[in-house]
Length: 224
Image (cartoon, rainbow, N blue to C red; front, top):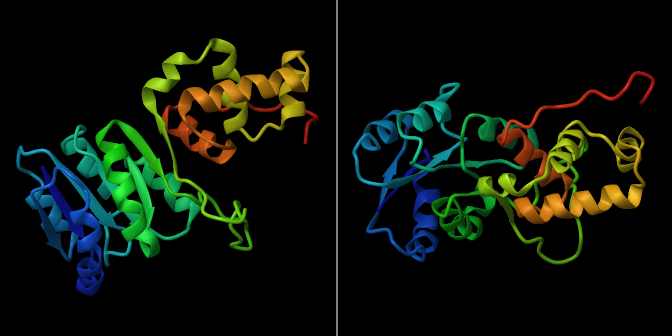
């Protein structure tokens, strides 16, 4: 299997080599400094994982969609910044993983096996507050999260409804009022959703819901 990376910084690519050599199953690492070269090299039939840096100069809009449409079975991982909106945009284009470029040496050896097994890799810190403060600041490392698309098949109709509400930023009390149940029952549903999808928190669940095209639900008028 081939591993292809596009990043303009050759020194950055050199620093990644030892980490990427730890990933089993790859015979070589092919390096490029622009998107077009990677796109051309990836046109072969041999299975590959594509690593695309969001820092590439002149990176065309929709480029990740182009790679995915060319071969939906070939996973694409984006190397980007701590930018939750950019992360979600890349998933909407079809990326199967997003790693923080500053932490790529640590995160890529985790991300590549996940996407090869059909999972979606999400970095340890998924979003930022408007002040750029990480949403998750607990002491110690936060384990990376991902979800499996086949986990959605385990959800009941009620759980899918709750997931729609989570995607739409409903609070537990809002969900309980709409469904006519207790907040405790809502928490039970949410725990089951997290377990089925393999996610650890609401932010990861929202990204999973976006990927799975779970519809959004508008709160009843009069709710804040």
